[in-house]
Length: 83
Ligand SMILES: [Zn+2]
Image 1 (tube, rainbow, N blue to C red):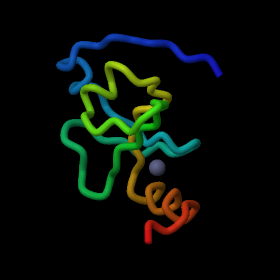
Image 2: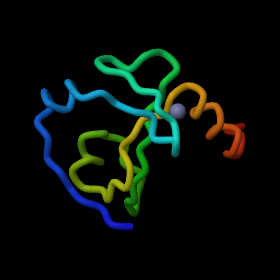
Image 3: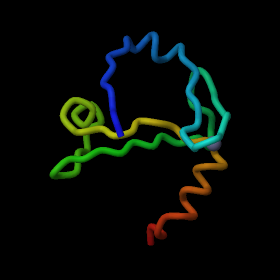
C-alpha cells in the first residue's frame, strides 16, 4: 500500500463531501456529520494518544475516514464485543 500526505486548509476540507470508506458504498454527506455516522481513525503509536490534535501531528495515521450507519453496524458485528 502506498500512502500520500496532503495538507488541506480546514475550510476546504469542511466544504468537501465525505463518503463512507466501506468498499463499494456510495453513501456520503456534506457539512456536519449526521447521526449514526462514525469516524474511523487508525494509527500506530507506542502508547495510546488521548489528544486528537497530538495524534494527528505525531502518530502514523493510516486512515482517517467515516462510515455510514449501515457499515458501522457491519464493522461492529465483525469486532469483539466491548464487554
Ligand atoms: Zn457505507
